[in-house]
Image (cartoon, rainbow, N blue to C red; front, side):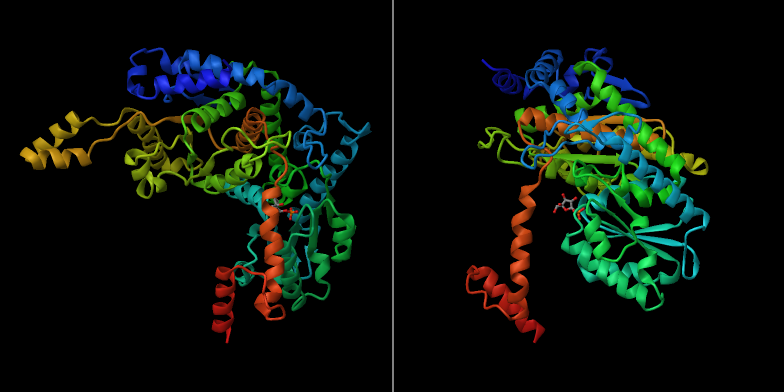
Length: 535
Ligand SMILES: O=P(O)(O)OC[C@H]1O[C@](O)(CO)[C@@H](O)[C@@H]1O
């Protein structure tokens, strides 16, 4: 019998066990909580017991998570559909010595980092200016990994923001760039074109639009552009001075890239010192991931809890619920991280995946989500494992009473999900309100909470740059471990290609220069109606 089958059997055996019962053992909370650095990770409100945890840890051991991790950290080409190393961790461990194909890669990483620091200081201190003087606004044009990371982090670290305002444009929908540029002054704006490949149609189209906008007021628009890319030729062809091009190697995956040049807007916003703390927090999590025993290892445990729910308890989705308004973009960031990494149907060896692919990730900050979709989480027929995260302290000392309410809500939700409310309790409440007979029963049943809905809580003192770095590295490694356990390549993303190709082919059909004879009936009908509406 394999560990996988053991775990499947175990999940069947514990399925109907009420979570509240587990807490009759008053050591449960301590037994299923781990701490590292500023983080406390409590996974006691799940139906994982000691035996399950041991089996999950055995599973990680059987899949050689540590061996795969060392292969990643040391620059082996573990992204083997693209024949690339996976070394985003090197971007936050600048002292490391790492070779790929026998060649030192760190000298260039350090040099680029130093150039970023110098440029960030020049922009912040007004040595680099626009035609109209000191830079007041930065527009980062990028999409996916070239947008979500810096956009999420700039918002998350708003209290540390003392540089120019940052704006992020990603969507090819002209509304996005239009509304962003509308109130900006081209003479004091710096445009950063962020694209690993420098071919992504959305980004290149928006970059051209920004260039035209800049040219209306600025005699040399290219002088107010910087580029973040792996392709020096393409950035040169776009007309950007190599002095403002910050390159990186193909072993930095798009969704793992905010630690290097793709993080330039963040570095300019919060300053190189706070950015260094952000890297440090992540590097500390890396070191913990590499050295801690599986049973003490935060990323491994977070992954094992995820695998338990997704694979063995048949929960297809996972909600990420930061009780932290400044982490409002974190769910979107984690969606790409998890779903682009582990949303695969073929295993490393090219065979059909015998298990489920990674989960659907979604979420919103609390308390907003409570007034929107928590209804389903509490009373729906499907179980949605929830990942709560909360800081003990906010950045607004004058509003400490609001932070207390925020924390109370976070804790109350996980408690309510775990405990639930029985029919007897609901009946007693409704009886007190004067209901009786069949109506009492009917009303009470609507007010029952089944409980036993699993959740984890990640608690940290305050959302500082180092803590944010730690959270993101924690999740990166979690996704890595999940990918190893599923046996997929977490570092390619072939599933995004087909839609891109079809969109390119549809352009001429929409313009009318191609008849679209090959199209299916539905698409042809939609094209015809759109062309008709265009007149
Ligand atoms: O940085 P680029 O090359 O513009 O790519 C942007 C995004 O597009 C994707 O390739 C998906 O299409 C992502 O993986 C990536 O983060």
